[in-house]
Image 1 (cartoon, helix red, strand yellow):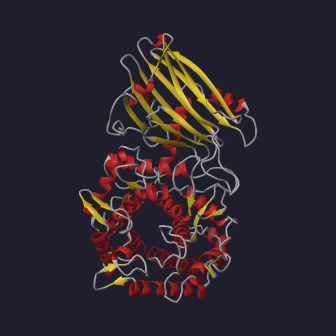
Image 2 (spheres, helix red, strand yellow):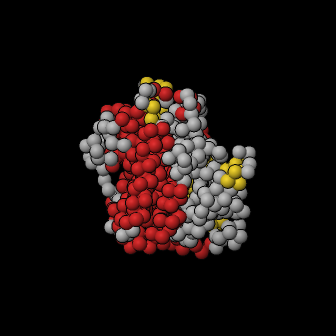
Image 3 (cartoon, one colour):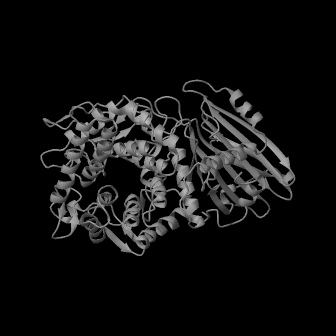
Length: 592
């Protein structure tokens, strides 16, 4: 067991090296999830909010997720007078290390209040557990209750009060019935009978300890980095759907209960991290979500101003993102939808890595027809007269007509090499040769048309004529997917980023695009750059970037934002473009 009950309660009172102190953060929204249900804990209001029985924003075009409860607020009374917990000083707010359990400790002059909240992973339906623990030498003078706002008929709430020694606690269990069905209290009552006292909390900690024991551990490094690694893995697990049916295995792009989407490229990074960390079952489920899906293909033909921007043939993967149960989705503007092709190459790389890691040749045999004709073939026929992948929306989702993005061609190169390996495994030598030839063509044209030798930079797209039009941080993937540490492309990539996209030396900060607001310090570019530097044996530079990320993340529950700026920090709890890259960085051994 990670912690005894005494250790948990002591952990809420003391500061130690293995826990993260978030007291300096004015307001945090820490997500709860078991891959089925979700909620938030709001550190400022001291409430649990937004109880959703699904993590996703929409199951389809027609079906929007709706909360079953909007908020639950603790009520503390002292001799009949209500105390204002919002005014109580916050001593510590954190995830119990290595788990998805939120813990917030508040200290008044005469009592301590600690809240715990989580969605248990050892159940397979929407369920939330909350403990509110009050400690005082005069505990009998206090009473605990909760205020529930906007409870739907589908929500079932049970609460039980206990007193022992100097502790009074309220144990709250919430479940949710299926859409349009009224709640059944037996689910809540049966859970409470099986998990009396604090056993629900202890079992959840045990569950996470067992799960982390399956992880591939990075080589010895500092405790805070190990904790960051574990918490990043935890967030990936929390963001992967465990629902029965079409949604199972889907990895949402952000851990944002009730509002999450899945972008294909984001899921590929998360899948790579799961493979990298030894969580084979979750990686396989991620791939099965993609490969078993039959809800994509609506952009096979897409006319826009008398030009066809469609894929041109039957395809398997989403051209942008997925609704909650696998249906293809894409944002549209007056310029048309996003059509992105990089994910096709990255999925091929995931499949190759999975088969190499597990030697699961049966998996490859079972899916080979789809891989060959509905993924790899899409990339080959998308190479246009430039010798690069055709114009499309790219990594920043710029809508049609798009550009010839370096990121997409580099990802396709990596994917076609994977397809070559898989075709060889399948004994399809002619197709293996076709994939190899297509990959070589991409590599040649990336160097001939996107590398500017006189400036020693790699353009982010073919169309840009001046740096502000083509400087793009996503070219970092030319190191991670295409180049060796010694070649000219790798050196050009670093020169491009340091020359055009580095805007603050202490600590270094990197924009994703030169023409964007230069104060937008993009997390994804920082993380992928750190990984590339580590691959190139530039360990000190890589660790400088990671130290900045760690310092900022410690203040935010190790949740990672889209941007680091002085205002909102952007969307938090990024998974594929955030937490996954922590795992990939710490497991990268090329510099060891």
